[in-house]
Length: 494
Image 1 (cartoon, rainbow, N blue to C red):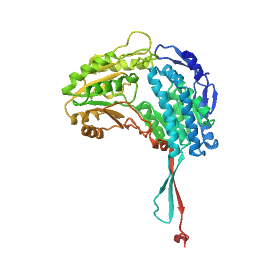
Image 2 (spheres, rainbow, N blue to C red):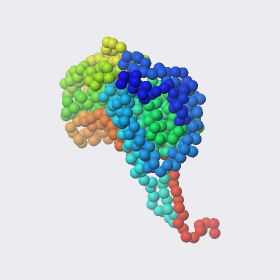
Image 3 (cartoon, one colour):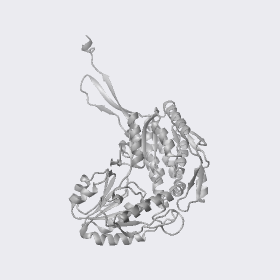
Image 4 (cartoon, one colour):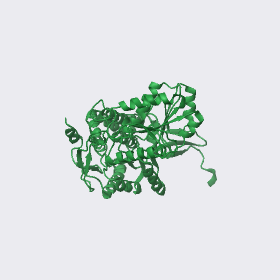
């Protein structure tokens, strides 16, 4: 099948999914573009503020009346298992669709589609096996802790890994018995619309899920402010997340925020350099650096700095940047021309701040929004380019002399999302990992994920938890039940 045939099979019309109905959104028509050459994938309608309100109101009705929350856990789990199966039945088509949607290399989008299926399957299994808690008795009564759905969840996802990010919010939220209004990133709506059709086919009741492509400033604002929305789960930029948190505080509404990062990677002199070089390259340049957990600050022990950087730069220059449809491609394009310009401005800023360009720093010839893998050195950790998230294939390298100085610089960031450690010394690895102010630490590896392991940001990288067996509980609220067991009436009223 051609790319256009694949798109048409998964997104067959310009309709969007509002309150369980496929229909034209009332917002402006949006032309989805392929970042590799600027060609149009498809034209779809988008939602406006009225569509968002309609979706929320339909979600509230469906959550209360469709009996989704009232189903036994194993019955909801069956729907999630069917979603996972349908995703895998369409695995290759969905991978090609996401490649067109955001320009990631095909080998990477195949992994992301499989990850989405595994996420639904994992939370289905968790749902079947989650226990409520009979708490210890402290009197003539029995006590029990139970969990109920929250209600209508607004899930707002980014453009860098659409189908995987959607699954990480939809699967636990639906498992918890909630209704979900999903707002995908404006520039990458196609995978989310395809996933909506899969959820519908799998048996998610009408109205329990809506998918609203369009402008975040319009749709997101309605979702966050709407009184029927009881929780917002957002993945994206820190400034937008901070605004959501302020509005949520006014509503006393819980939020989950997975925000920006400026993650340090640390290479000690005793590290296996072959592993470290490859791991550092993967940590920053896979996904073209468009990852919140990208290892964008590199600290190398001074005694091996020159040798390590020589090897790192040589391999960076060999990375294959180009057509995302080719299995040999390691780096695809950036998401838009505007975003590439932002990356270029940061590189120029780094040079103005005194940085030295070791490789990259330019666009390759040809069409598309490509940018070469870029490495700079000669900067301190306090430089703006070391403190602000670039979200692109730009690495800043700095030498360090001792562990204390390293930890000071590694933790000297408003962000605290992830970090990497490369050393053969397991005691040092543990010591440094525990001292880092970050939610995830990789040791002698980088950017590996497991749906079974909780993920969260510290500091301005966010709040709340995703993934893990208790990830469903992030989309539920706790209730305590008391049974009186006393034989005589309460003495107080005598």
